[in-house]
Image 1 (tube, one colour):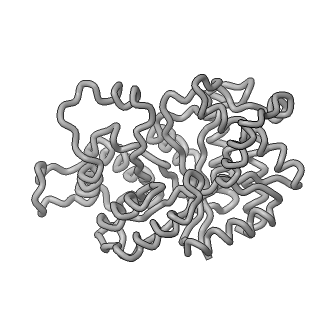
Image 2: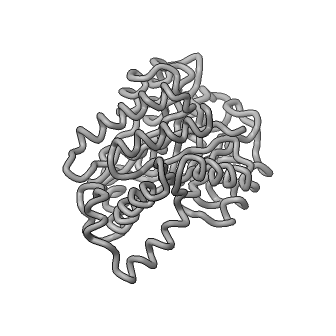
Amino acid sequence: MFSLNILDYSPVDEGSDAREALLQTTELAKRADQLGYRRFWVSEHHNVLSVANSSPEMLMMHLATSTSTIRIGSGGVMLPHYSSYKVAENFRMLEALHPNRIDLGVGRSPSYQIVNKALNEEKGTRQSYEQKVKDLQKYLTDNTLEDHRFRKLMATPKTKTSPEIWMLGTSSRSGVIAAENGSAYVFGHFANPSEKGIEAVTNYRKHFKPSSLLEIPNTMIALFAVVADTEEEAEEIAKAFDLWLLFVESNNPPAYYPSIETAKRRGFSSVEQEKVSENRKRMIIGTPQQVKEEIEKVANWFQADEVMIIPNVSGFQNRLRGIELLAEAFQL
């Protein structure tokens, strides 16, 4: 049986603000800890005003202090923006204070080009993503034996335990990088719901090379999930989520998650409805039992070791209720 995890975006609800969104993420993490979820991860988004978290490491420190047993992680740190050495230091600091509870999820999404430019404009030659991943693993394993341009450099603080490293991706390429470096792998089914995902996970397992951090392959599938007490309620919540996805993909998105009421009033044009229908392939919607069955079906397709749900819906009470219902359905 796979373990069940949560990835939270810290959405800014209509009529609310970023501070409230971050406080709600904290409450959601506390409740997930009580309910028995294994991991609670937070995302990294830049220049998206409807999402509050731009610094997962800082929020993770707060969440790890606010919870007791659940693993806290990043979903993920966008490595092209940063120095691998500094990322290793940040996560070693987290691990030192919260041993055996820290996950480092790493992604390559460049976000907006202007974001990457602003974060890197004073830097010289940049390393490839593949090299940055290798560098990160070197610093987190204290490897001073193999040939490296900074062979004797070590990341501090030195810790007895190490964060788990997870490579995030939506293509076979990300799976290959994870396999070559002997790290765990998350496939973003919510972003690319196709048979290519099964191919990516299969190739990852086939080519996995054991490392000092992981002896056998470990896979996780990430899914958008909309869970409510009734099908009708789940559909109403999903329509607000449909609208947010349309907003995010537009040229001038608002600085909030639209409410259910806003989605009802606005409706969708025929062109928008086509896009909504396409986006619905990226999510699972329904009652706890319906969503549980669909999650189990996807997990079986991928032979996944873990599943991460993204309850990325409007309204904190809807998010809270959703994870409670799912925990009950899975008897966590």
